[in-house]
Amino acid sequence: MQGTQQPTSEPTAYTPTDRTVPTRSAERASYDKELVHSILDEAYVCHLGFVRDGAPVVLPTLFGRVGDRLYVHGSTGSRPLRMTGQADPGLEVCLTVTHVDALILARSAFHHSINYRSVVVHGVAHQVTDPEEKRLALDALVDHVVPGRSADSRPANKKELAATAVIRLDLNEVSAKLRTGGVNDEPEDLALPHWAGVVPLRKGYETPLDDPDLAPGTELPAYLG
Image (cartoon, rainbow, N blue to C red; front, side, top):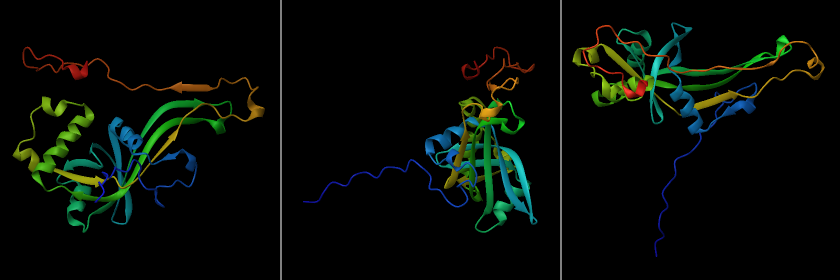
């Protein structure tokens, strides 16, 4: 009798590579998918690095995530977006995000630090040419900034879509790195008369300011409350 085939479960972690294993403080690295995704989803801006004319270039930009794929958009005249269309099989990039969660003030200058969460992604970026994937990517970019916003705004028209380029980067070669905890002063410095401790940092919405040209009766959406 033929046995019942069990469903294959999705991997819960990314596979470490030579490029994703840190040479310093390797114990802070993580390859857990859920953690990586949470760090990416909480960030507004990524930094996209690539080589142009033999020199490194790093650009801050917005991005969005759909599953194990990141999308970055820009003008069709943007250099890296043009390069992804010209290069075969794509453009080698490195994409990073970082959150600073707290300042660590130590008694010694040497042991000052920060608590942080970061993600580094290596891979090959490709230009998105399929119209449906492009619309999906642009919705993801809008919702990444404010969840639910793409359904509460006019979608891009043909002219705007023609002026916008989108590149995709698959999450294959990925690592997260974190620093948590408090002060790590030397034992001989503990009696020094300098304040030491953790200064947490907060992120959140301030009170939204209405555009002066709002249509009459337009109310603040619940997702901004």
